[in-house]
Length: 238
Image (cartoon, rainbow, N blue to C red; front, side, top):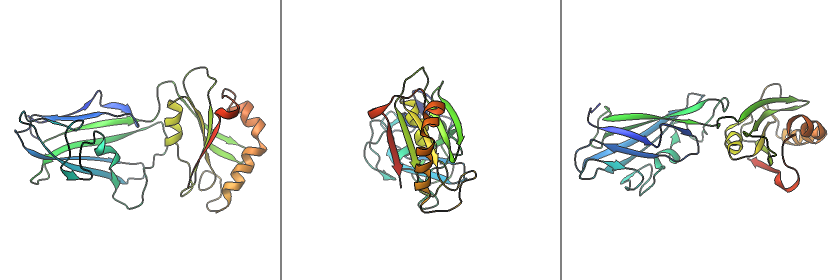
């Protein structure tokens, strides 16, 4: 790597997954064109990447927060462009994490725009899913399988039931991030998870029936510190 060039993630290399950061590079040659590249690998081993070209200022600096990308995965002034534009090497694949206790490591590197496999500089941005004090509770009650996320503090909190239907299994990422915002979230699986059916187009109706059948238990044992009525909701992604 070029010992002069430096990549910084501000205000910190560690942040929450949905928290904006500012990526800056210094130590480049005046008006040098560089390729900024980001990549991360999920828990299935699928790689996600993005890249964009920038031209350094006369002082040899690049600030993704104020300077336009000249092309690549995106163009124009996009402070978080390297993150939102990442695509999987395998088409139609979404980011998958085994659970929300871990974090995603995003490697950000800068290369000469003229080519070459050797990075001038790089940094790793660690993006976590849970704030300090939040709780993650695996749920196995009757036919219900899922994970409950509870925000820090005494509550009461509004409650959300989160169903992720595409491909089955259990997705915790959205639920954990909503818990950071003050919601109690039950992420519900209904097939391809634990001892649930491996397939089944209509399993979602069984999942709703299960929730209805044990609603009193759920409220008393699981969602006891959520708010009631209009403050509760349902998220369904298909």
